[in-house]
Length: 219
Length: 252
Ligand SMILES: Nc1ncnc2c1ncn2[C@@H]1O[C@H](COP(=O)(O)OP(=O)(O)O)[C@@H](O)[C@H]1O
Ligand SMILES: [Mg+2]
Image 1 (tube, rainbow over the protein chains, first blue to last red):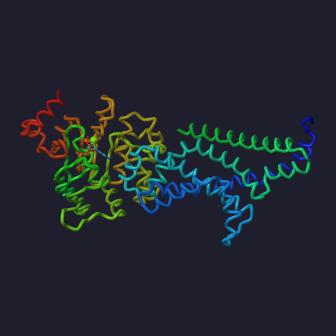
Image 2 (image 1 turned 120 degrees about the horizontal axis):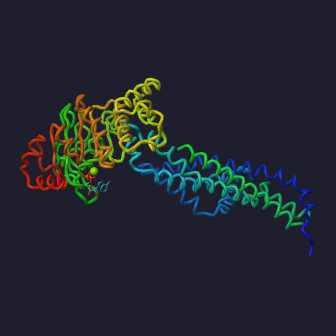
Image 3 (image 1 turned 90 degrees about the horizontal axis):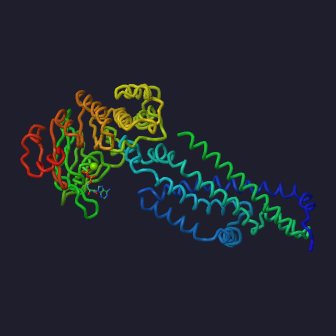
C-alpha cells in the first residue's frame, strides 16, 4: 500500500490550475449560448404559432433525449464525414450549448407559464403586443423564479464540461488523465481534479444564493 | 354608438357561454350588467376588447368592425396589429387588479403610455402623477402594488387604464375581491368617472351603485340577456321571474 502523495499534488497543482481556465471558459460559453438558445426555444414553444411550436418541441425532444456524450461524438467524430469539421474546443462549446439550451428552454418555459394569466390579460388590455407583454411584464416577473433552477442547470453544465475530455479537448479532466499516466499517481491526480470541480460548483452555489437573496429583498 | 354587439355566440369547447346576445352601449352611457355567477358576464366584456374571440355574430366598436361572423357569409376578423390598437381605446379593470407587481405605482400607470402610445417619458410620468392624484393615490407614487391595500390597488388599476385615455371603460366585478370597508373608495372613483361622462360597462353585484349611477341595467342568465331597462324598471318592476329570483337572493 502506497500512502497518499500530497507532494505530487502540490507539484502538479499549477498545471491543474491552468487547465481550469478552459473549463471555466467552456462553462461560461455554454451558459451564455445555452441561455440565448433556451430563451428562443422557450418563446417558440409558448408562441401561438404552430410551426414555431413544432420546431421548439422537436428541438427539446432531440437535445434532451440523446445523451450529451453521444451528441459530442456525433459533432466531433461524425460530422467530419459529411464535411463539417470542428476543433475540439468548437465541438465542445457547440455540444454543451445546444444541449444546455434544451434544458434551459424548459426551465424558462415553466417560469413564464407560472406567471398568473391575469398579467398577460392586463398587458393586452392596455394595448401591448405579445412581444411587449412578454418582455416588459411576464419575463421580468419570472426572473426571480428562474434563478434556483438556472443555478442548478449552470452547475450541471459546469460538471458536464468534463465529458468533453473524450473528444480530446484539453480541460481539467483531460489534464488529470495525462498527469495520471505521466506520474503513475491516478488517485492523487483524479482527486485533485475532483477537488477543483467541487470548489467551482461550491462557488457557483454561493453566487446564486447571494443573487437569490438580493432579488428577494427587492420586493 | 360606442359599442354594438349583434347576435353574439361564444362557446368554450362544447359549453355555450353566450347565446344570441345583442347589445349597444351609447357614448357617455353607464351600463351595469348583473347576473348569477357563470352567466357569461365576464366573457361578454372580454369579447368587446377581444380577449375572447366570438364564434358567431358581429362586434362594432366606435364605428370600427372588430369581428363579423355570420353563417354562410365570409368571416371578418380584425388583424392582430389592429386588435392591439383597438385595445388602446378600451380600458379594462379586473376583479383581481392584475397590477404589474415588479413596477412601482407610477410606473404601472406610465408603462403603457410610454411603450404603447409612445408618449415621451417625462410627459408620461407627469400624466401618471395626475392620474394617481385623480384616484387619490398621490402619496403612493413610489410604492409597489404589494404594499398597497386592496382598495388602493384597484384605484391604481383604474388609473393605469385611464392613462391610455380610453373611450370606454370595462369593469369586471371591480369590488368583488375587496374587504367590505374598502369597496366605497373604489365605487367613489367610478362614480366620479361616470360624472365626467366616461362611457362605462360595469359588471357588479353592488346594487346601490347600479341604482345610483347606471343609465341602464342588463340582467344576464345562462348566456342570455334576460331583461334590460332603467334601474327603476329592473329594480322596481322586473318583468321576468328569473330577474326577480336573482334580485331577491342578492338583496336578501
Ligand atoms: N377560458 C375558459 N375556458 C373554459 N370555460 C370558460 C372559460 N372562461 C369562462 N368559462 C366558462 O364560461 C362560463 C361563463 O363564465 P363567465 O363569463 O366568467 O361568467 P360570469 O362572469 O358571469 O361569472 C362559466 O361556466 C365558465 O366556467
Ligand atoms: Mg365574471
